[in-house]
Image (cartoon, rainbow, N blue to C red):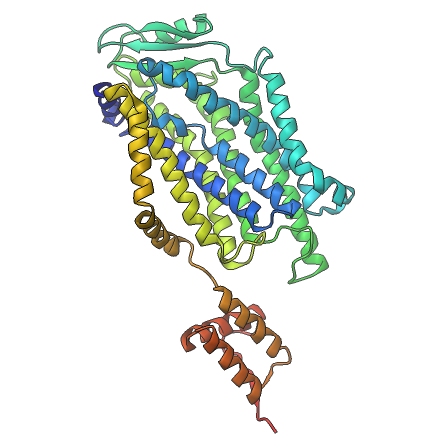
Length: 471
């Protein structure tokens, strides 16, 4: 336990930017849970819709891409090497599969969203199969590439400095200790403070796949924009089958693409320019952070590198935020009043799973038997399920308020049919009033529902409906 306390004390010290790296890891984990929740929502809203299945897979892959640092909320040093023998594959393998799969999904946008020049791709046969074939291809591609030179993570070591003023030592993790790792240790020279950090192979091929993502996401954005423009020309003001169902989703994807391009430019141009023209890797951050008497320039370089790591989860988080915004304004992919309930269940499940893993690991270090902690936290969650659900439900009510209840939707449907000719008889008004009373809708809420509907017809909130007297 003392090792864990010492690790986090160092991680949240001023020299480590007050835990900025770990804060990014926590944020990445939140985005991961959020995106998986949205993926589940989209799938469950209409399990038979191939468009929903495609979008659910895409959101899931985006969440995995945002989670690169998520597992680093756990102590990451040679003392916990046994734990990281398990966590490292869980960190990297799904991440690389998601990178490849998302590229393939971007290229397949014209299958689900009509683009005039690629209209031949927009057919039912492709729609039925693309959503599951591409993830399978992505998985197979990575299983092949990971065995090829320049793609797999073949060597890993630890660079350790036991105290300030000493020289770092290198300890092998797996594979072999490479000359590059020894050079990193030599470049550090005399350590400014103690540390224990991993240095894993960063294959050029894997970096290439990661940096191709922003380019293909830009191409996907062009496809989406072309589809939206085409639908606007064909049927102004209506939703055309085969187009993105909400402008908010497009804005979210646009923000994600801008963030990824910023990451692309920073990694390929800005950081190398500040690093003497050499590509800046994770191991370089150890040198600029722990080298003897780090200069202001080196600390600024370390901060810029740390900031770069937050760009991708922040961009994907913005995409998730705009997705939620879209579901609040419209019925998107069939998601309406079920959103808040599923949000609650998703958060509860995510918190439970994370708590189980974290407490089990903590108990493993304290008493040497982690399952004790897992059973304890599991029992606590089961016993406290109802109050925990109530707390999350209050939170979800604020973050994701329901636009309309089922009863209000029934009333809105009747109201829309009644005012098609913008004339309401006294008899129709009485029937509407009785319907509202049956669904227990207050007069104030009725005014809001009717006003929103009139605004959706571009009538404006001050529009009036003529009421005729019955004969």
